[in-house]
Length: 407
Image 1: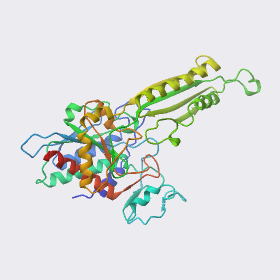
Image 2: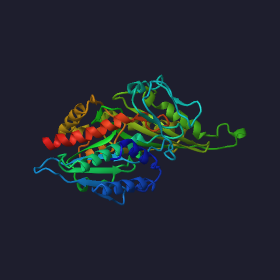
Image 3: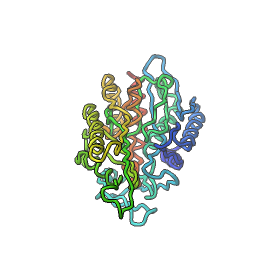
Image 4: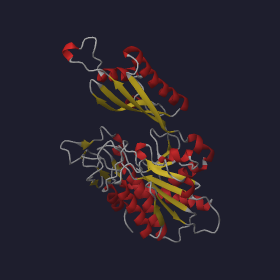
């Protein structure tokens, strides 16, 4: 049987970065390299699997018990975030972590430091997989992929393990908010499902941000600076002015828990014109709707001050808080809590300060909480994952299956 570490390292070696500027599905053809690999690995284990034109791998393991129990699905995404390179990843494996700094050898002077990331001290004595400082790692969500595949390997290798119908799904483009836009829930065939896409061991989430993107275009007017008085409109400065109108305390670096935010994630331009990209988040639906109104009101102010058409805002909803869809089926959360306790993991139910494929799947009629995959510091060069957390996540998958088969 292949070890989960070897499986994980094989998956992170495949560049699967998604592209929010692409209109195709998947957004990048290279995601199909890993998706095809997963389909073939499932088939090699004797599991019927398909890969469709939209980049969805779906697989099914038929029940081996003689009574009807719910069909349970497990889902993870293969793409890595556009925030940092996902190519030519060189993982570092730190055995028996001693609690000190971990040098990221690809960038002189760069290190993972417990003084900056105190969670590292939770994993003294464990095996940590880190980046070398030049790329992200891809534990979000290739740790989840590896955990699901590890559980599948166990199930097909242990015919005495009793289970109902098990559905497996791997998706592209989760990081750009389009992971399950064309996902066919009916064809997937699960009654309930879980995304393996959370952070530290023990995390369990069934409520997430309501999410939108906002694109702001500033139309300026360029005039030779020597003759610009009363004529020039500097789009860069007007963009900065618009950003200053947003609530100062509602930024990611000042918020936590259920608090929402406006996050400026891109700014480019010149004196003539500039473009800004935001993500807008809030757990509370009413506050979320108000935030969208606020950014529009800021643009209106700019247009009154500088002239009609100076600022244009386009807001697009991305996903909504799945709590309202999951809570009526709260047993899916209770099963996950018990499965973690069986694995010796202390459950921590908390809101996701982000989103998962499970949010959109829940609104498609498939209640789908999110379970830890084990990684930390996602989307950047400081990303790492404890091996023992991945092993526990795979065990939790098997425990959930046991619980439903015994129910």
